[in-house]
Length: 144
Figure 1: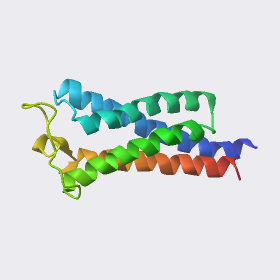
Figure 2 (figure 1 turned 90 degrees about the vertical axis):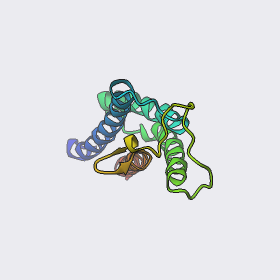
Figure 3 (figure 1 turned 135 degrees about the horizontal axis):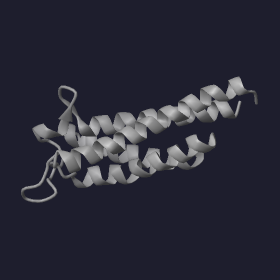
């Protein structure tokens, strides 16, 4: 494989890492700086996003383009939690969104939107899906 053929997968890998790292840092900022504790579904999404940031960073460092093999399961499972959270948010899952505690956060609150009203569960789903697409593109570029 020539150097030019490796540039494109590396850029895709870097993009996937930037998404995972940015998402992880944003979640930490929302919780620690803004003081908004995550709901249960947010915790599950974090449990799959935070390791992705580390795994993809190591893959970038070693130019490991087979990272899709072990990052894809985390991305898919995380996206399923984000999808369930998004469906719950819009009311397609007939269950009210419950706060973590009686006075705790609720994802249906005003503080759980960003960029002019985009709900955080939708943003989480979009990031997981973007990482999945990037991993699939990496797989396709490396194995063709």
